Length: 333
Image (cartoon, rainbow, N blue to C red; front, side, top):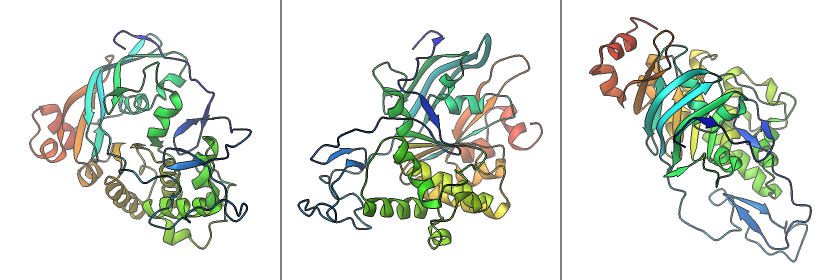
């Protein structure tokens, strides 16, 4: 896309998963195929050997949770690139020609004062901007060189590959911890055997740094966890659909220092497997966790844009723009 235009209508009615990605519901197949069918890292349908003695499959193990498909190369880390993104809400332009490359396997922090377009930009990166009726945009968002807004790409594919964790931890309160993690599979119509589900829950909770704290109470409601634990549960739920990019909109703003530290440690560990983009107002947090930074700013009455971008160390120690220096040193914002 090069000129502003209304965003394409979703292919399926979107379903919002609180505290997590927005995933469009896919219909379940009324008659599962007789042979295994695989999508992403999950089996869409796998006969259970316990229910079907004729189905002789290798059993899952912690090192191979999904053994039913042929082994293949590890999923490559993804590069996310925004080119000349401008965005409007009705007649009001909120972003002006923003270009940013979010490097594979690294954490990119979006910093800047409130109202400069950081969260709008983050929503554009996984097509949430189009959920606003008056929204429009120009430019392109490329995931490994492919425009996620292309008419040839499904909305559900973009949101599977680019997950999101929101500012307020918001698991399904009456749903168990176990079922919260698996909510993404249910909404996308994926089928898995009990042993696959068990291993997936353990794997995602472990990556989110929560497994040891909840492994003895997986059937208790997710709403009974502390705020920091709920946010990590939301991260685990995002990981269950195996995104290649994880967007995080101020994930620690409502948490205490101890919970914030755990979330930050989780992000650093996850960056080995997924590209992360985080919005934060906490300059110390940006310094602690990010590899690269982009400083957004909007003068009064004008759309937001990037003033400066680069490696985090350089941005904080030797910025090239005086406005960046003033902001990271607390002189405004």
